[in-house]
Image 1 (cartoon, helix red, strand yellow):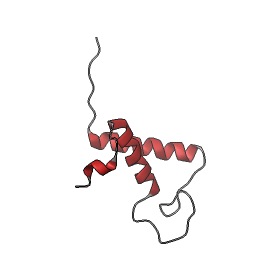
Image 2 (tube, one colour; image 1 turned 135 degrees about the horizontal axis):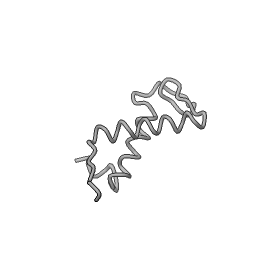
Image 3 (spheres, one colour; image 1 turned 180 degrees about the horizontal axis):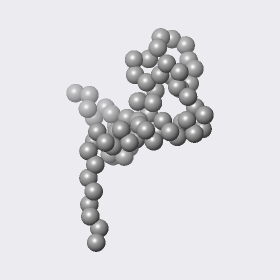
Image 4 (cartoon, one colour; image 1 turned 45 degrees about the vertical axis):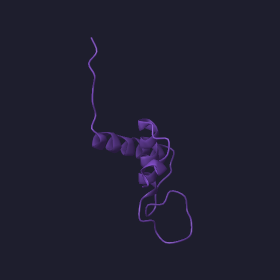
Amino acid sequence: MSHATTVSLEDLVTATYCALDDALVSVEIKAKDGILIPRTGPAPEVDDREILCLSIIQEVLGFDSDLMFSR
């Protein structure tokens, strides 16, 4: 008999971020001051890994676009 398991959104985000960070480290991609790929300009306000994590979560949860929330 199988049982449905529920995961809170907070736990899903945390697990996704950790898995993403571990995957990047395993292929020797390291963030420096929140930046994964060197680029000019000021330091970002949000870490690149956080943006990638949110993008993955949007896909997992089936959001077609982040524009659907910009009202």
